[in-house]
Length: 323
DNA sequence: TTTGCATGCAAAG
DNA sequence: TTTGCCTGCAAAC
Image 1 (tube, rainbow, N blue to C red):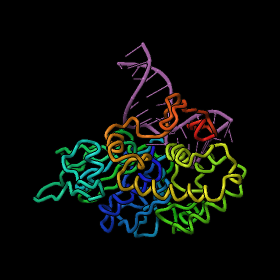
Image 2 (cartoon, rainbow, N blue to C red; image 1 turned 180 degrees about the vertical axis):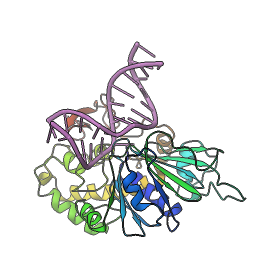
Image 3 (cartoon, chains in turn brown, orange, yellow; image 1 turned 90 degrees about the vertical axis):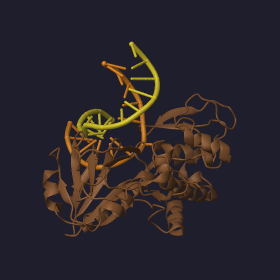
């Protein structure tokens, strides 16, 4: 159930551990057997994330497009690295760093001979680390649609909403349908595209932020939080949102996405005091302004947070601060 | 122990 | 517009 930040982190795992080595591609579950056969034995030459989609380019010119949807996940295992911030936030690894920045802790450095150390990392939802010492490669857990296996690392994909082999033309077409992604597109150009589209539509801004053709990577959590941070009424038609507010939404998304990719968490209260921020980091609850806080008092004004379904998804907002 | 929901999309009807 | 994905989690029994 990832929003854009986790997909970029997953792509980074593929860049680190799966590029430029032959990859055995299989479908333990069977549903992707034909696709796997087209990619089997080839090298991955590029991992690309755009919004919530990831594209892996293989050296035969074919691509694997993956969309995790609501409950898809990648499980990595073997000789893989894990970001220190993620690991410490999960309380599993001792090593942390003072600045909380993205110093990748090499939780591997396989010093010796033999099979790679088996470190498991689930990406999406909370990223969980299970340092373990079983055999490599591990048995697939659950219904694994695709397994990508190198001599030292393995990635298992389960429960995706989309998983298919594509040509470059199909990849380009898929990406062309997507709105700007701050980690792909130039920030200024992205801001212009986003602003131009939003200012044209009468659709409520809450729906526009979730529309992947308008802007890439925002999901239900970031949507609610961005709107609160802007103190903007979610039902305001796009064309009625003041231009500077629209630009502010884009810039705030740039900031939150970068923070999310760095930390592996959806931090949306980064403007809290350092002490409160630490607390928000430590507990999973109380991490957001309005998301999933129906009926609880607004952190600013105390008014009960409102919730209403809009376009089949739950929308949370403060009826007073976002009036 | 069981139930119901969920950070989302694509395909079926 | 509804269903499938078929998972992980927390809340409810």
